[in-house]
Image (cartoon, rainbow, N blue to C red; front, side):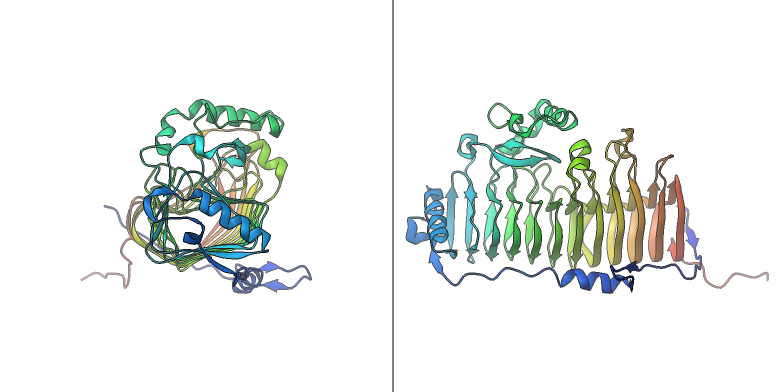
Length: 452
């Protein structure tokens, strides 16, 4: 295996930004300014037991009516905390949340969702792979709500391995129809899916919500994406554990959303751990709401990819901080930024600091030509700052940047990067102003040998 060493000293590149009053903010100042705007909701002290509404944790009794009644009472009383004691609770249909409601899954409790598709009808307004449409309800759904929380030491189990997950084999026709509706700007009321279609519902979705807390719970066996944060803001997710191995079981998918803190998470997903999105193609550009101000820290990655931006990101992604994270198992790619010339939009002001991976296929990968397709709407990718990152082994490539001929990836700054071994150290095409400072790929070369 070839070994490479790159030690290029570059002085005075700037990782700061400008505040509205013209002052320069450092990376940490910018991050801390964002953190001030992320405040978890206050949890209601109006506590009630789900079992008082007829729920039985015997894995057989349908407890959806109990949830519906408890949430109704919470709405009437302007808020409440629904406590779910130890037991296995079958839920045949979706839980539709209300503002000022907290669900506390106590230790030993598990919500197991039923697998009959008809239980998740009528259709609700949602989004699927970056296109707004009406589809089966997400299993836990919040629409235009405030001050909502799901906390505790219990589990939400989508129970989808042998049911909804298998729909992926039959989804192509409906998937292509949704994209056609997107590109042709078909009116939203005409985008009706649900029965007769095979677009899998999300496990948890917050849509146009604000002030959200997800803490402590375990999430497993999702039908599709696990937690979809759609057009929402002020979100805290911490100490969540994932055990999700079905197809497209992303962990967190922020989309058109902002002011998000994802911290101290144990990922174990069959797909992306965090995938930041902002709409697909025409509709994303038309919506024009960027995903921004997202902090991912102190997490342990395991799954397909650690942190991904794209590929549905047509409204743009900016101000993302990935810091103080490590790995608990294999990831195909560590950090992955992807778009193509169908998307447009931008990816900018991305900060990766103090991050470590073990064995991966590719360590750090940027592509503006994802799947080698698209035309007419190139993505502007710039201002990427990577500092103090490590990887033990990259079986394919260490650092990859693939720009587009008419829109090069620019202004990417690597410092303190150490990769112990990899097949290909660097692969940069259609790039400009890529800056290195203290890069070691392979075994570090020290004092030069001399003639004897």
